Length: 220
Image (cartoon, rainbow, N blue to C red; front, side, top):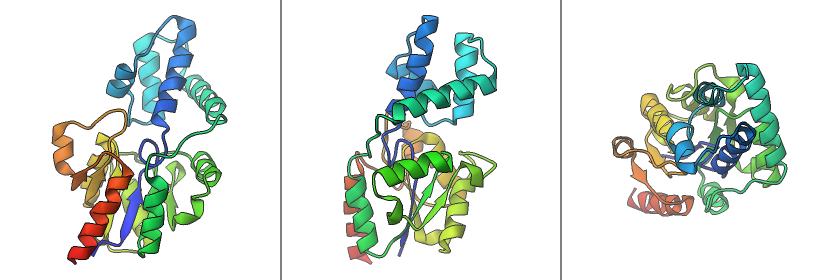
């Protein structure tokens, strides 16, 4: 019986992908560039911030160094996040279901601790998680499995007793590389069919995950 669930953060638990799109879009506007949501989904969604900043600088020939670009992106993101960020549909219901049914839960994210904890506490869901793995806790990002393996270690459960919830192709790869079954709930960019086939299930929202675990538990 799988009794631990590891949550990705951006694009899975919180609706931050659309905020990242807005950040890049607003930073490019003064240079006369217009980023479409399709361009963001294809080239930036599900990737690390540093890789995205490198991509922005290279693609749009921006007059920034990498660290300057990172600072601009993070400052703009803080400005937008101050307006508030939504949880993904079904997040609260799923978290309460897992807590009530004895599942252990963890956050495994490439987001920084300060950023993620603030968002979790703003929505009063920080205490619904047992463990956390943040960017500061790992050296290799997805699709390397480190973030999920670290979460399993902190949860003190057998790796075969876990599921991962992810939205991105790199997250699916990381789960597979860790040897943990993954449920995919796509965000802006839907993973290609090859990646979807690697998932135990693909759902439209976190609400659907409740039904998945209810059915599974009843069959055991």
